[in-house]
Each structure stands twice: as structure tokens, then as C-alpha cells.
Image 1 (tube, one colour):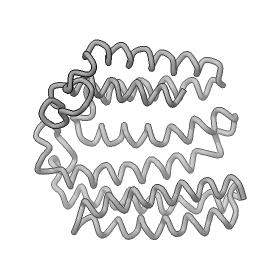
Image 2 (image 1 turned 90 degrees about the vertical axis):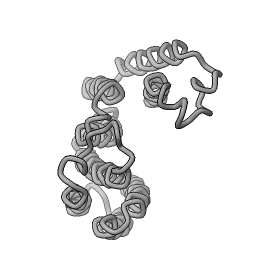
Image 3 (image 1 turned 180 degrees about the vertical axis):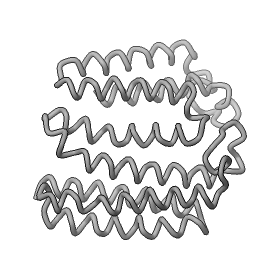
Length: 227
């Protein structure tokens, strides 16, 4: 189901950005002539329909999450990715939705809310830092840094990273995850705390380390679920 969802999103992106890609990414399937735009559109529709169809057999909460994710992905590709913060929030939700979906499938949605919130906050911070990094090149997007300035947007990103850090101990304190989770997530926290400061001097380095922090946090989630 998730596999089809990603196919749908990527095919839709290729279809909608085909004119931009002619100059920026001429090697991609549509601008290179290896695929017709209509074919990409049909693949996207079929993949999204397949993803939704598979979600029908899941618990109601999981089905609702999939429907919401499809709606937000469609809105993002068609409109909200050019609207800065709304697009950032959309990507953050889609990342968090993966964890919510996992909890809903096994009917333990409550156990994944804190994890999803951490993923949401960390992703939101990274997306804003990326917009600060791309500030000079974003001619067709009205991003948060463009609205309020790079420094204020950076403060929002740092607050998002630090909120994720503050929330990271909740699964341990609640007794859902053990010491193995805590040990690894503290390493992820250290990376996010570092990101919350370094991105002001070097946004590219900050968002790269945020990605590493998210990977370490994922390992912590896996450790918490197995040990």
C-alpha cells in the first residue's frame, strides 16, 4: 500500500513538473522522451487507486490515515508545495503518517502518537532549514524564510527540533520503550540540538545533520520495539 502511494506521488510529481524538468532534470523519464506525460498521469492515478483499495481491508483508523495522506499529497503536488510553510507542514504530516499508519494497522495507534509527533517536528524543522538554504533560488515559491526572514524562520526550525528532543523521552517515561531506546534516542537528541544551532551558520550542513538525526531516531524506534 505504501509502495503504491509513493509510486503515485512520484509519478504525479514527474507529470506536473515536466516543463521545469526539461531544463533542470532533462534525464528524467518525461523530458528525456522515454515516457509520455499521459502515461505518467495514468500510472499516478492507478497507483493511488491501488493504495486506497488495499487500505479498505485495514482497520478504520488506518483507512482514514491513508485517505488523508492521499488528499494531502495531491494538494501538495498541485498547490501547497509552492506555498512555503503549508507545504512544509504537508511533508511533515506525511512523514508522521507512516508511524500513525503502523500503529493503526496493529490497532495500537496510541503507542505511536508520540513517535509520529517527533517525526513531524523533526521533519518540519528540516524542511524549513532547506527553505532557508534554497532562499535565493526559490523564485516560484513563497517560503517561510521569504515571508519572515531567514533568522526568524531559523528560530522556528530550531524550536521544532528542540520540541522533538523534549518529546523524545515520553516513550521511555511511559514505559513503552526501554533503556535501549533511551540510549540511542539521546544520541539523536544530541544531533538535533547541534542542528538547532549550526543551521544558522550553514543551512546545508544543518539540514544534512538533521537527516542523520532522523536516521538515528529511526534506529531508536526500532530498538524500542525489539528490546
